[in-house]
Image (cartoon, rainbow, N blue to C red):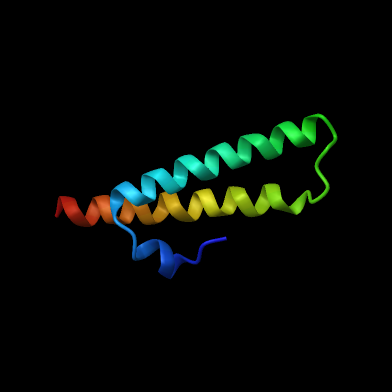
Length: 67
């Protein structure tokens, strides 16, 4: 779980790769849940929030660069 301050320190390209990695991780967790192999169900929620946090900071950076 990355903190917002850690994500803000990254550049746009690094944030995009971070989001891609988080989406892959979230997909794998969903597949584990579907096959009933997932032990920690809270990890789905944590990953989803990490994705939202990274996307929000990415949007802030893109909006700041546009100005």
